[in-house]
Image (cartoon, rainbow, N blue to C red):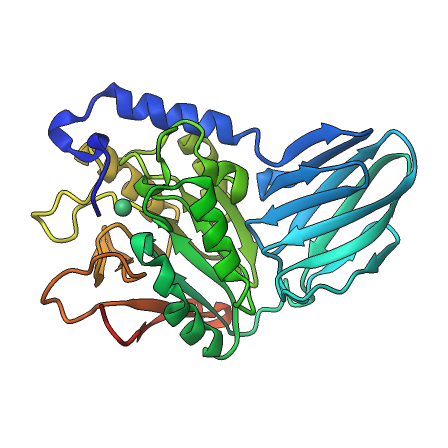
Length: 360
Ligand SMILES: [Fe+2]
């Protein structure tokens, strides 16, 4: 959990907030691009537009369901490559022919785009199914990327998993080549991973890290099968003011559903002595108060390289930092990931832990 200087409470200043705000401002541009007579806009910025070529668009999804708005100067066929997709995603809204790809989470279509405005919806058939289902969560792979297949291999055998969530620190330095290597490793998985970033992703450019271009936004929210998911960029040990503005809307949207909130650095130190927490305890209480009053059911964090189940302001909380980075000594945990079984009809999310051996 080696952290940026902002994390040290004694050194905290308005500078941390300014960096977070600048990063949040920059990420608002993610999900939009125009070139070659085509404008692409993904609702809520839930996918990064990684390429917009003369006849091809490549998106990296950060949610199971996307609404993609196209404005074309002229009618014509475009190839839409969707990476990190639900393997059974279906495209509706324009005539489209699926193109076979070898990676399960790479969905591709040749789309006949008419002139003018077109709205595409890309979603798996079960997007509204209220029956029980499973997702996984983990964090803090960092310098253990070479061993991440131990984790992914075990995850891939977990029955019924629809997607995974990463609560930050995918890599050690957050550079583009390592993030790409992480994404290549993800190709062995039969489901996508939606990620927020950690302090290790900030690298040399804390306001515009490569994570933004390769994965997408650090703060975003989506709903799937009776559960709202809100992922928040707490990599600078604070939330940006403009993220709080969005959070109000997301909390309102999830008020009647199960709601899981995820961020890298926990608002409060779960251990009491570690300072693995927000720089301001005042802000931590403010944020947790917002989540509690909105009926958030589960919070999931990373940053501390262990597992801990506890509660914060009455909300079930989990630290799952067992992705492979140097583990806590003598805690008996080691590498692990979490499973969550969502049971919307019973209004509950049931957690589990899967340990990976060798443990360190
Ligand atoms: Fe961290």
